[in-house]
Amino acid sequence: MKFKKFSALLLATVMVAGTVAGCGSSSSDSSADSSSDAAAEESTDAAEEDAATEETADAGDASFDGVTITLLKDTDIVDDGINAVIEAANEKLGIEVEVEQRVGGADGDNIVKTRLASGDMADICLYNSGSLLQALNPSEYFQDLSNEEFVSKYDETYKSTVTVDGVTYGVPVSSSQAGAILYYKPDYEELGLEVPKTWDEFIANCDALQAAGKTAMIGTFGDSWTSQVMYLGDNYNVLSAEPDFAEKFEAGEAKYATTPAGVESFQKLSDVQKYYNEDYLAATYDDGCDMIANGEGTHWVILTQALSNIYSLYPEAMEDVGVFAIPGDNADDNGLTVWMPSSLYVNKNAENMDAVLAFMDFWVSDEGLDAYASAVLPDGPYCIQGYELPDNAYPAVKDDMQAYFDAGKTNVALEFLTAVKGSNCPAICQECGSGQTTAEEAAAAYDEDCKKQAVQLGLDWK
Image (cartoon, rainbow, N blue to C red):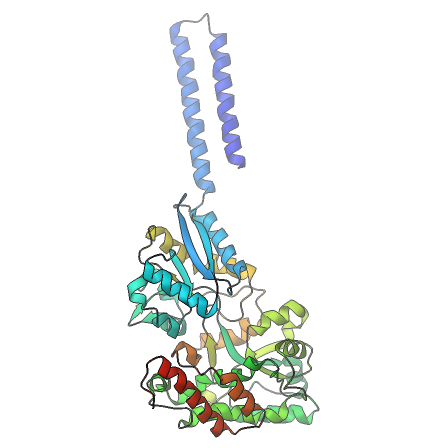
């Protein structure tokens, strides 16, 4: 470092000067020699003090120099943002972070459970938020963060997904995303359409677009998972109508087929079938990114992670792509279904707990979030209140999605509230969305599909 080299040079200069002075006064009396030696010693002490001061200044707020902590993550999580925060935290705090990788999916879950049970968990574990966290018995393994100051900044919807029995355990690793409707804004401007707040208004917009010769809906059923986003993204509306639906659904006391709002989620799949592009059964997710960016279709119901895919291909198109929530029946309660990020959990047996907690605090600070966003642009708002998205954030996130968060009009997808999810959901939604089954038949089929998993989970479903 430059200041260290300067201090060393200064120290060497003082020593040389003292030596020259000593030689020059060899014929002087002892008092002169003592004064010279004292001056040289004083100058040396001053130089060493300056060096120490400058080194401390360079370290900034570093208070954990030499401390190393470990973080276990799955390979499905992109490293760029994580590495950017780790680097920034190292500069500020002096903490070194060793990242351990594990596989994703069911095999990765088993690794996490095994390492927790054996006491071999890293200091920090990156894992799912929501219902899967509850299955890990977090009170036994993870540090209670409820009283940490940074938790007070959490978005309440996010906080609910990392809180079990009143105790908060998680730190959001990245931004949120949503199951919503991407739309091509130039089409809305051309036809004078307004963003709909009810389902009837949305259908009216689709009719107007179709009458104008445009493809009102983009379907990408060639990638079957995309067909379920309409149903999944409608959960805000289901919970608005039936606030305790998730709890009753897990207990087997409520079903989609016997809940009007639940049937309506599948009915929306049927309602839009006539507006799709001709090749919607074969078109893929990548095709959808191309179509919405180039205005070849006006609406696409998809996870907002698609924004980053579109940006990588068509950065100039981001000003033309907006987002709005899947509408319900009540214009005064129009809200967004959100997928919350995975979270960082602190091993309650971490050796350097002070350093780990300082690292967690930094992660959700403005500096930490800025570092993450500098490497990976967010696909939705961050889960930290008061944080301003970077200037280069996608307009669909900064302007459209953020407004729902600011208004408190968000709720999470059902999978964050219950572990019960039917494995055949994409196929059931494809059949309903292509007109092969009715909404009522699809709802009943999904209930039956979920029953299989509920039995495997030991739930009392009938």
